[in-house]
Image 1 (spheres, helix red, strand yellow):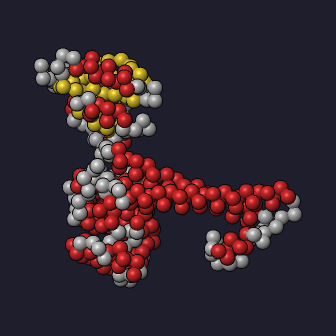
Image 2 (cartoon, one colour):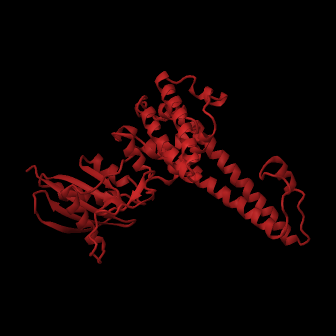
Image 3 (spheres, one colour):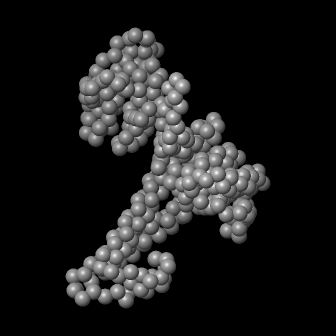
Amino acid sequence: MNSTIFVGLDVHKATVSVAVAEGTRGGEVRSFGTVANRAEAIEKLVGRLARDGYRLSFCYEAGPCGYGLHRQLTALGHECVVVAPSLIPIRAGDRVKTDRRDAVMLAKLHRAGELTAVWVPDGAHEAMRDLIRARATAVQVLGKARQHLQGFLLRHGRVYPGKRGWTQAYRRWLTTVRFDHPAQQAVLQDYIHAVTDAEARVARLTRQIEGLVAEWSMAPVVAALQAMRGVAFLVAVTVVAEVGDFSRFANPRQLMAYLGLVPSEHSSGASVRRGGITKAGSGLARRILIEGAWSYRMPARVSRKLYDRIEALPQAVRDIAWKAQARLRARYRRLTAAGKAKVVVTTAIAREMVGFLWAIAREVQPRPAS
Protein backbone atom coordinates (compact mmCIF):
# COMPACT_ATOMS: atom_id res chain seq x y z
CA MET A 1 0.00 0.00 0.00
CA ASN A 2 1.10 3.55 -0.69
CA SER A 3 -1.79 5.54 0.83
CA THR A 4 -1.23 8.59 2.99
CA ILE A 5 -2.51 9.01 6.52
CA PHE A 6 -2.70 12.53 7.89
CA VAL A 7 -1.90 12.68 11.61
CA GLY A 8 -2.86 15.58 13.85
CA LEU A 9 -0.94 16.00 17.10
CA ASP A 10 -2.06 18.19 20.00
CA VAL A 11 1.22 18.54 21.88
CA HIS A 12 1.58 19.33 25.57
CA LYS A 13 4.43 19.08 28.05
CA ALA A 14 3.57 15.55 29.23
CA THR A 15 1.18 14.16 26.63
CA VAL A 16 0.38 14.17 22.92
CA SER A 17 -3.18 13.64 21.71
CA VAL A 18 -3.24 11.87 18.34
CA ALA A 19 -5.87 11.81 15.59
CA VAL A 20 -5.66 10.27 12.11
CA ALA A 21 -7.45 11.09 8.86
CA GLU A 22 -7.50 8.71 5.91
CA GLY A 23 -6.02 10.23 2.80
CA THR A 24 -9.05 9.75 0.56
CA ARG A 25 -11.58 12.56 0.27
CA GLY A 26 -14.33 12.02 2.84
CA GLY A 27 -12.29 9.30 4.55
CA GLU A 28 -12.63 8.52 8.20
CA VAL A 29 -11.22 10.91 10.80
CA ARG A 30 -10.85 9.47 14.27
CA SER A 31 -9.02 9.94 17.53
CA PHE A 32 -6.09 7.57 18.00
CA GLY A 33 -5.64 8.18 21.72
CA THR A 34 -2.98 9.84 23.85
CA VAL A 35 0.71 9.01 24.20
CA ALA A 36 3.44 10.31 26.47
CA ASN A 37 5.49 13.18 25.09
CA ARG A 38 8.72 11.18 25.13
CA ALA A 39 10.95 10.18 22.23
CA GLU A 40 10.49 6.44 22.73
CA ALA A 41 6.68 6.76 22.92
CA ILE A 42 6.60 8.83 19.72
CA GLU A 43 8.79 6.31 17.92
CA LYS A 44 6.48 3.50 19.00
CA LEU A 45 3.46 5.49 17.78
CA VAL A 46 5.07 6.00 14.36
CA GLY A 47 5.78 2.27 14.12
CA ARG A 48 2.13 1.43 14.83
CA LEU A 49 0.80 3.88 12.27
CA ALA A 50 3.23 2.91 9.52
CA ARG A 51 3.23 -0.86 9.96
CA ASP A 52 0.86 -1.46 7.00
CA GLY A 53 2.99 0.56 4.61
CA TYR A 54 1.15 3.86 4.95
CA ARG A 55 2.92 7.13 4.23
CA LEU A 56 2.51 9.41 7.23
CA SER A 57 2.10 13.19 7.19
CA PHE A 58 2.15 14.74 10.67
CA CYS A 59 1.21 18.21 11.84
CA TYR A 60 1.14 20.04 15.15
CA GLU A 61 0.84 23.63 16.34
CA ALA A 62 3.89 25.77 16.99
CA GLY A 63 4.19 26.37 20.70
CA PRO A 64 6.34 26.17 23.81
CA CYS A 65 7.41 22.58 23.14
CA GLY A 66 9.63 23.71 20.28
CA TYR A 67 10.76 21.82 17.20
CA GLY A 68 12.14 18.65 18.79
CA LEU A 69 9.13 16.59 17.74
CA HIS A 70 9.41 17.85 14.16
CA ARG A 71 13.06 16.88 13.99
CA GLN A 72 12.37 13.42 15.41
CA LEU A 73 9.56 12.69 12.95
CA THR A 74 11.51 13.92 9.91
CA ALA A 75 14.54 11.89 11.04
CA LEU A 76 12.27 8.82 11.03
CA GLY A 77 11.53 9.53 7.37
CA HIS A 78 8.05 11.04 7.61
CA GLU A 79 6.65 14.40 6.61
CA CYS A 80 5.87 16.84 9.42
CA VAL A 81 4.68 20.44 9.36
CA VAL A 82 4.58 22.86 12.25
CA VAL A 83 1.44 24.94 12.00
CA ALA A 84 0.94 28.65 12.71
CA PRO A 85 -1.71 28.66 15.51
CA SER A 86 -3.05 32.12 14.64
CA LEU A 87 -3.87 31.02 11.07
CA ILE A 88 -5.86 27.87 11.89
CA PRO A 89 -9.46 28.17 10.61
CA ILE A 90 -11.91 28.09 13.53
CA ARG A 91 -15.69 27.78 13.28
CA ALA A 92 -17.40 30.68 15.03
CA GLY A 93 -20.05 28.50 16.63
CA ASP A 94 -17.67 25.90 18.08
CA ARG A 95 -17.76 26.28 21.87
CA VAL A 96 -16.16 22.97 22.90
CA LYS A 97 -12.39 22.67 23.05
CA THR A 98 -10.55 19.54 24.19
CA ASP A 99 -7.21 17.98 23.32
CA ARG A 100 -8.98 15.17 21.48
CA ARG A 101 -11.08 17.56 19.38
CA ASP A 102 -8.05 19.74 18.64
CA ALA A 103 -6.11 16.75 17.32
CA VAL A 104 -9.07 15.65 15.15
CA MET A 105 -9.45 19.19 13.79
CA LEU A 106 -5.74 19.36 12.92
CA ALA A 107 -5.84 16.02 11.09
CA LYS A 108 -8.92 17.04 9.11
CA LEU A 109 -7.56 20.47 8.15
CA HIS A 110 -4.15 19.01 7.30
CA ARG A 111 -5.77 16.60 4.86
CA ALA A 112 -7.72 19.49 3.30
CA GLY A 113 -4.56 21.58 2.93
CA GLU A 114 -6.01 24.40 5.04
CA LEU A 115 -3.09 24.77 7.46
CA THR A 116 -0.25 27.29 7.16
CA ALA A 117 3.18 25.94 8.05
CA VAL A 118 5.83 27.97 9.84
CA TRP A 119 9.49 27.91 8.85
CA VAL A 120 11.44 25.49 11.02
CA PRO A 121 15.06 26.57 11.69
CA ASP A 122 17.91 24.12 11.90
CA GLY A 123 19.61 23.52 15.23
CA ALA A 124 22.35 26.13 14.71
CA HIS A 125 19.90 28.82 13.63
CA GLU A 126 17.62 28.11 16.57
CA ALA A 127 20.59 28.31 18.94
CA MET A 128 21.58 31.74 17.60
CA ARG A 129 18.01 32.94 17.82
CA ASP A 130 17.85 31.80 21.45
CA LEU A 131 21.02 33.76 22.21
CA ILE A 132 19.71 36.90 20.53
CA ARG A 133 16.38 36.65 22.33
CA ALA A 134 18.22 36.16 25.61
CA ARG A 135 20.02 39.45 25.01
CA ALA A 136 16.72 41.16 24.19
CA THR A 137 15.33 39.88 27.49
CA ALA A 138 18.42 41.16 29.31
CA VAL A 139 17.91 44.60 27.75
CA GLN A 140 14.33 44.63 29.02
CA VAL A 141 15.52 43.66 32.50
CA LEU A 142 18.09 46.47 32.38
CA GLY A 143 15.42 48.98 31.43
CA LYS A 144 13.23 47.85 34.33
CA ALA A 145 16.15 48.03 36.78
CA ARG A 146 16.93 51.60 35.72
CA GLN A 147 13.25 52.52 35.96
CA HIS A 148 13.04 51.14 39.50
CA LEU A 149 16.08 53.13 40.59
CA GLN A 150 14.89 56.39 39.05
CA GLY A 151 11.39 55.89 40.45
CA PHE A 152 12.83 55.40 43.94
CA LEU A 153 14.94 58.55 43.63
CA LEU A 154 12.04 60.62 42.31
CA ARG A 155 9.75 59.42 45.07
CA HIS A 156 12.19 60.84 47.62
CA GLY A 157 12.89 64.08 45.79
CA ARG A 158 16.39 63.19 44.51
CA VAL A 159 16.39 64.59 40.99
CA TYR A 160 19.48 64.65 38.79
CA PRO A 161 20.21 68.26 37.73
CA GLY A 162 21.83 67.30 34.42
CA LYS A 163 20.17 66.83 31.04
CA ARG A 164 20.80 63.15 30.37
CA GLY A 165 20.75 60.09 32.58
CA TRP A 166 23.12 57.14 32.70
CA THR A 167 26.14 59.12 31.56
CA GLN A 168 29.39 59.06 33.54
CA ALA A 169 28.31 62.31 35.19
CA TYR A 170 25.01 60.74 36.22
CA ARG A 171 26.77 57.74 37.74
CA ARG A 172 29.08 60.03 39.71
CA TRP A 173 26.02 61.91 40.96
CA LEU A 174 24.52 58.64 42.20
CA THR A 175 27.50 58.20 44.53
CA THR A 176 26.67 61.53 46.19
CA VAL A 177 23.04 60.65 47.01
CA ARG A 178 22.52 60.13 50.74
CA PHE A 179 19.54 59.11 52.86
CA ASP A 180 19.14 59.62 56.61
CA HIS A 181 17.73 56.17 57.27
CA PRO A 182 20.09 53.22 56.65
CA ALA A 183 17.23 51.14 55.20
CA GLN A 184 16.73 53.61 52.37
CA GLN A 185 20.46 53.78 51.75
CA ALA A 186 20.49 50.00 51.47
CA VAL A 187 17.63 50.13 48.97
CA LEU A 188 19.50 52.69 46.86
CA GLN A 189 22.63 50.58 46.80
CA ASP A 190 20.67 47.46 45.92
CA TYR A 191 19.00 49.22 42.97
CA ILE A 192 22.42 50.44 41.78
CA HIS A 193 23.81 46.91 42.00
CA ALA A 194 20.81 45.59 40.04
CA VAL A 195 21.51 48.08 37.24
CA THR A 196 25.22 47.21 37.23
CA ASP A 197 24.52 43.48 37.10
CA ALA A 198 22.00 43.92 34.28
CA GLU A 199 24.46 46.03 32.27
CA ALA A 200 27.13 43.36 32.71
CA ARG A 201 24.70 40.69 31.53
CA VAL A 202 23.83 42.64 28.38
CA ALA A 203 27.51 43.24 27.62
CA ARG A 204 28.34 39.58 28.20
CA LEU A 205 25.60 38.35 25.84
CA THR A 206 26.59 40.95 23.23
CA ARG A 207 30.17 39.64 23.24
CA GLN A 208 28.84 36.08 22.87
CA ILE A 209 26.82 37.10 19.82
CA GLU A 210 29.77 38.92 18.24
CA GLY A 211 32.01 35.91 18.77
CA LEU A 212 29.57 33.31 17.39
CA VAL A 213 28.16 35.14 14.36
CA ALA A 214 31.41 34.64 12.41
CA GLU A 215 30.87 30.85 12.56
CA TRP A 216 27.18 31.08 11.63
CA SER A 217 26.03 30.08 8.15
CA MET A 218 24.00 33.32 7.92
CA ALA A 219 27.05 35.54 8.57
CA PRO A 220 27.22 36.79 4.92
CA VAL A 221 23.59 37.91 5.11
CA VAL A 222 24.20 39.66 8.44
CA ALA A 223 27.15 41.55 6.92
CA ALA A 224 25.20 42.52 3.80
CA LEU A 225 22.19 43.90 5.69
CA GLN A 226 24.49 46.28 7.57
CA ALA A 227 24.86 48.26 4.34
CA MET A 228 21.51 49.83 5.22
CA ARG A 229 21.42 52.96 7.31
CA GLY A 230 19.84 52.22 10.69
CA VAL A 231 20.80 48.54 10.48
CA ALA A 232 23.97 48.12 12.51
CA PHE A 233 25.31 44.77 13.72
CA LEU A 234 22.78 43.97 16.43
CA VAL A 235 19.81 45.02 14.28
CA ALA A 236 21.06 42.94 11.34
CA VAL A 237 21.74 39.81 13.36
CA THR A 238 18.35 40.08 15.09
CA VAL A 239 16.45 40.46 11.81
CA VAL A 240 18.28 37.52 10.24
CA ALA A 241 17.70 35.34 13.30
CA GLU A 242 13.98 36.14 13.39
CA VAL A 243 13.32 35.96 9.64
CA GLY A 244 15.59 33.05 8.77
CA ASP A 245 15.54 32.10 5.10
CA PHE A 246 14.72 35.25 3.09
CA SER A 247 14.36 33.23 -0.12
CA ARG A 248 11.09 31.71 1.10
CA PHE A 249 9.40 35.08 0.49
CA ALA A 250 8.54 35.49 -3.18
CA ASN A 251 8.30 39.27 -2.88
CA PRO A 252 8.98 41.95 -0.26
CA ARG A 253 5.27 42.42 0.49
CA GLN A 254 5.16 38.90 1.93
CA LEU A 255 8.06 39.72 4.25
CA MET A 256 6.38 42.97 5.33
CA ALA A 257 3.23 41.03 6.19
CA TYR A 258 5.26 38.36 7.99
CA LEU A 259 6.77 41.03 10.24
CA GLY A 260 3.36 42.60 10.93
CA LEU A 261 4.18 45.96 9.33
CA VAL A 262 1.23 46.11 6.91
CA PRO A 263 -2.03 47.92 7.77
CA SER A 264 -4.94 45.88 9.08
CA GLU A 265 -8.23 46.07 7.18
CA HIS A 266 -11.86 45.23 7.87
CA SER A 267 -13.89 45.89 4.73
CA SER A 268 -17.28 44.61 3.68
CA GLY A 269 -19.30 45.77 0.68
CA ALA A 270 -19.03 49.52 0.34
CA SER A 271 -17.46 49.87 3.79
CA VAL A 272 -13.68 50.08 3.79
CA ARG A 273 -11.92 50.39 7.16
CA ARG A 274 -8.16 50.29 7.54
CA GLY A 275 -6.50 50.30 10.92
CA GLY A 276 -3.06 50.12 12.47
CA ILE A 277 -0.43 47.59 11.51
CA THR A 278 -1.26 43.92 12.10
CA LYS A 279 1.67 43.36 14.50
CA ALA A 280 1.93 39.75 13.37
CA GLY A 281 5.17 37.79 13.55
CA SER A 282 8.22 38.73 15.57
CA GLY A 283 7.66 41.74 17.82
CA LEU A 284 11.40 41.93 18.48
CA ALA A 285 12.32 42.30 14.79
CA ARG A 286 9.51 44.78 14.22
CA ARG A 287 10.56 46.95 17.17
CA ILE A 288 14.22 47.22 16.23
CA LEU A 289 13.35 48.00 12.60
CA ILE A 290 11.10 50.86 13.72
CA GLU A 291 13.91 52.11 15.96
CA GLY A 292 16.29 51.95 12.99
CA ALA A 293 13.82 53.90 10.84
CA TRP A 294 14.38 57.00 12.99
CA SER A 295 17.80 57.43 11.37
CA TYR A 296 16.17 58.46 8.08
CA ARG A 297 15.10 61.79 9.54
CA MET A 298 18.69 62.90 8.87
CA PRO A 299 20.01 63.88 5.41
CA ALA A 300 21.24 61.03 3.22
CA ARG A 301 24.98 60.50 3.61
CA VAL A 302 27.58 57.81 4.08
CA SER A 303 29.13 58.34 7.49
CA ARG A 304 32.48 56.90 8.53
CA LYS A 305 30.82 54.08 10.49
CA LEU A 306 28.59 53.20 7.55
CA TYR A 307 31.52 53.33 5.13
CA ASP A 308 33.45 50.89 7.29
CA ARG A 309 30.50 48.49 7.16
CA ILE A 310 30.00 48.64 3.38
CA GLU A 311 33.62 48.82 2.23
CA ALA A 312 33.97 45.07 1.67
CA LEU A 313 30.45 44.43 0.36
CA PRO A 314 29.52 43.80 -3.30
CA GLN A 315 28.70 46.84 -5.41
CA ALA A 316 25.15 45.60 -6.02
CA VAL A 317 24.48 45.60 -2.28
CA ARG A 318 25.96 49.08 -1.87
CA ASP A 319 23.81 50.41 -4.72
CA ILE A 320 20.62 49.04 -3.15
CA ALA A 321 21.55 50.54 0.22
CA TRP A 322 22.19 53.99 -1.25
CA LYS A 323 18.96 53.87 -3.26
CA ALA A 324 17.17 52.98 -0.03
CA GLN A 325 18.75 55.85 1.86
CA ALA A 326 17.86 58.44 -0.77
CA ARG A 327 14.30 57.19 -1.17
CA LEU A 328 13.51 56.73 2.51
CA ARG A 329 14.91 60.13 3.48
CA ALA A 330 12.71 61.79 0.84
CA ARG A 331 9.69 59.78 1.96
CA TYR A 332 10.29 60.73 5.59
CA ARG A 333 10.27 64.40 4.64
CA ARG A 334 7.10 64.08 2.54
CA LEU A 335 5.17 62.26 5.24
CA THR A 336 6.31 64.70 7.91
CA ALA A 337 5.37 67.68 5.74
CA ALA A 338 1.92 66.13 5.24
CA GLY A 339 1.38 66.32 9.00
CA LYS A 340 1.60 62.63 9.78
CA ALA A 341 2.46 61.68 13.34
CA LYS A 342 6.09 60.71 13.80
CA VAL A 343 5.21 57.22 14.98
CA VAL A 344 3.20 56.69 11.78
CA VAL A 345 6.05 58.03 9.67
CA THR A 346 8.68 55.79 11.23
CA THR A 347 6.44 52.74 10.89
CA ALA A 348 5.94 53.49 7.20
CA ILE A 349 9.70 53.92 6.77
CA ALA A 350 10.34 50.62 8.58
CA ARG A 351 7.93 48.88 6.22
CA GLU A 352 9.82 50.14 3.18
CA MET A 353 13.14 49.29 4.84
CA VAL A 354 12.01 45.67 4.88
CA GLY A 355 11.64 45.74 1.10
CA PHE A 356 15.22 46.89 0.65
CA LEU A 357 16.47 44.36 3.21
CA TRP A 358 14.74 41.64 1.20
CA ALA A 359 16.45 42.83 -1.98
CA ILE A 360 19.88 42.89 -0.30
CA ALA A 361 19.41 39.42 1.21
CA ARG A 362 18.68 38.07 -2.28
CA GLU A 363 22.08 39.32 -3.48
CA VAL A 364 24.12 37.16 -1.09
CA GLN A 365 24.11 33.49 -0.26
CA PRO A 366 24.41 31.94 3.20
CA ARG A 367 27.30 29.61 3.77
CA PRO A 368 26.49 25.88 3.71
CA ALA A 369 25.50 24.71 7.18
CA SER A 370 28.24 22.66 8.79
